[in-house]
Image 1 (cartoon, rainbow, N blue to C red):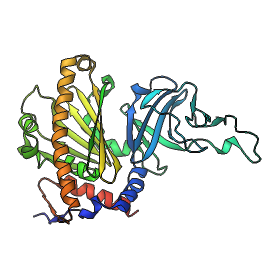
Image 2 (cartoon, rainbow, N blue to C red):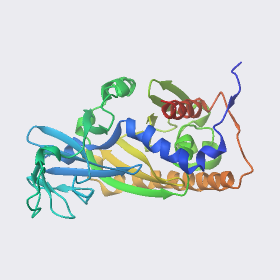
Image 3 (cartoon, rainbow, N blue to C red):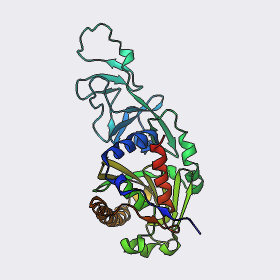
Image 4 (cartoon, rainbow, N blue to C red):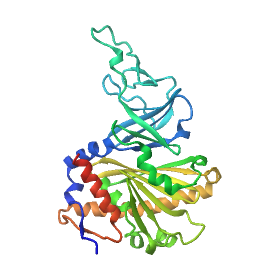
Length: 340
């Protein structure tokens, strides 16, 4: 018989100081998904994202990918202001025009004037690590973090011979939810709620056989599909601390769960589909519409839970050993990260 597991305290979802610690201690030390290499195909191609308040960018150079904080060394202006595009041969600050080579070196401090002691070599961009897995690009601000391949080894094994190289970026959708980021993650990490919250999903997969297994830094979810023509392939994987890999019959959706603040979360859905499905408007719409229905249902329940937690009545609960092992795992990860 499993020992009763108590949930995290309600204060962890409404404490501003706790959120700031999570931002630095969790997101500042983790591998964060940014894009697919096909979105960075040409020299000067750039993708950006702000994740838990960290402004990040990846750029294609002649020697490969480089990643930096999207922050000018002069007075913290933005270097690139679009989600994706091409910067040409230099990254130029939108504030005062300081220009950086694609490897991060300061090339020009526009109209700065003569200043004793000013050495451009001391003002290169703040760099972050960048690595790829099966064509997907991740960054990490922690220079001492284990390699991305070690984190994703369990996912790599589960994906087996799936040909991810054929997939193309089809669509991006964003959804804002008025809840703490951990509430949404914990909702993602269990199938206990599916029969009550997700009727259409419950009809597509056999929730009675929903299984959760944890392998290293990845939590897998599997529910057998009831039909061969459904959208879902019955496999979901959560990669700590904020990435859902939702496997479809014709591709996958990379789901970033991005904290916007203490009580706000943005979901960024990037759909990577086979060229045949990506080029079929009806099939593509069916996939996006199906995930939108599930998201709307999750938004409703997560926001209601956040409201109830903020009421100050609920302080802690208990976790189901049958259904909520992933939630317990995640809560331990966050606690351990904050204790480092």
